[in-house]
Length: 180
Image: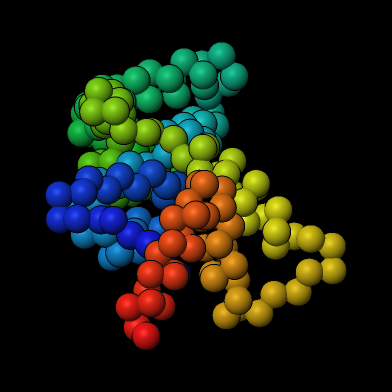
């Protein structure tokens, strides 16, 4: 069970990696959501691309951070144009893949602007919480879970972790009283 307080004017921000279907799934559940590509995932892709382009360690670091700074400050279109031009001159499969990746998320990487708005630009907090809330319970030695019981159990763990326990039971009891 999910207790939701989303209203029409509720601003929903989704920060995630660029995995296939992640953004689409979030946008399907939250129309109008601002999707932000996790900055550390973009940086990882930049490093992989720089390696494929043959940059050595010190030049690699410089190239990645110059591109990341340009992208973060809202110049993603200029970065894309330069990368496309470079790939036309020196074709490289990894560079071509990165251009596609960045094009797909060009509206989700204006990190300086997002920070000005107070939005998170990384998913580390959520990924860290994942270890202490669901994994702690699901990965017990000898634990066996049925797919139908995982989501309700996770909902209760989230309620407890957010200190909503009393509110949850007040809500449940009032709902039963109204039904009677």
